Image 1: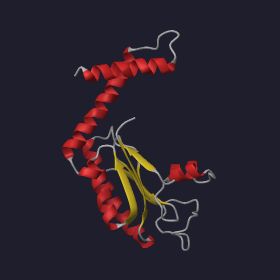
Image 2: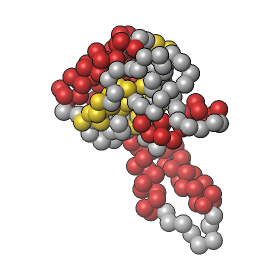
Image 3: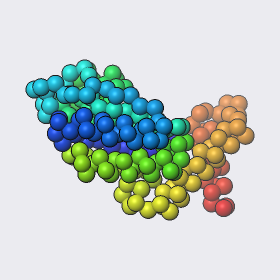
Image 4: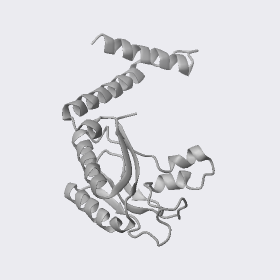
Length: 197
């Protein structure tokens, strides 16, 4: 739970990788974000294929109070990251295989300014290095570039999390109450509170 964005795509050409890593590393250094550089050169003969090896290529960085942002790829050039490769890299199930390429980052606790910086970085990288790139922003900043909309969406998520935390602290589970009934009562209280504001 919390405002996030979701993305996938591929690097347009394997020879772009070292320049992309250098640019992202510079951004991470400017903001003082921790970063990890993965493999820096694609192996010959694997880029563009369906298959991939067990390595990750590219860079990942972690702003304060934010999940790690991976601008990294499998040897076939498609975006992925270390956790996805570990969890889904060897699956034979087709729906699970697609999870390998579905990346998400929660920025809720990092705040609006960091969210904006990351989205603007993706705008730049998309124009210069990516193809078949898609990003869905729960704050709608990617789609609209509207700061006021992003601000109001962040507020909605924060209010929802605050209400839910308050409700959990102040509405204990009643004896003989199922978890489904408890959650129904909890969400009913949150909805009623929001309607009265």
